[in-house]
Image (cartoon, rainbow, N blue to C red; front, side):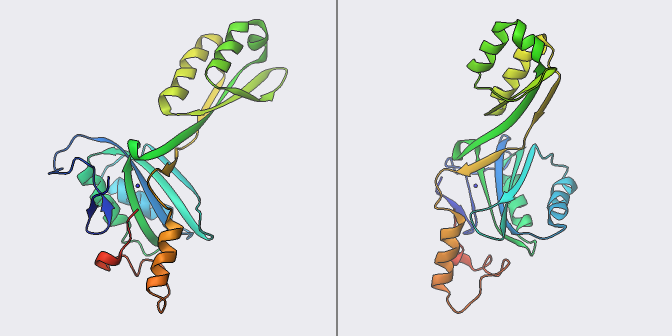
Length: 217
């Protein structure tokens, strides 16, 4: 979402070898799809039927107009993740699915914290702690102030622990957004495929089962 390839389709870890029974870890599943009503529900069902908990799910526009990008985070073994990605690719509107470990992506989460403005004003130490943790004020009102920070889960969790003693009023965190480190982007892969197959219109997932012609990311 190492340079090895499974069936011209999905990446495996650089360690290789038999992954049956491998230890679970976080995986980022990246899905490129057409923007169709009901697709999110069908993808979610693939996970719920296997009793797999989704730790984070984000949908957004991608680098290609009219193509959307899902980023799903789960904690599972690579064997399970590989089977999931194959199942997801069977959905008609799904163009391509990749999976990566946290080491293979650059990722962030956004968090908002609401605290009493009086506390911030009275206790200089709170303001200092917020600055040290990269938080910035996005709303300042007489009764409360909202701070924003971005980072990894442990970083946003750490600020919760810091603010709890000072009366943290509200907290919310976004789903994860992630960029693949070693990737030229889905757009370049799609354009290259169109160049190699100029007589065929690349739609839906017609090209997913063409063996060595299927691009990797």
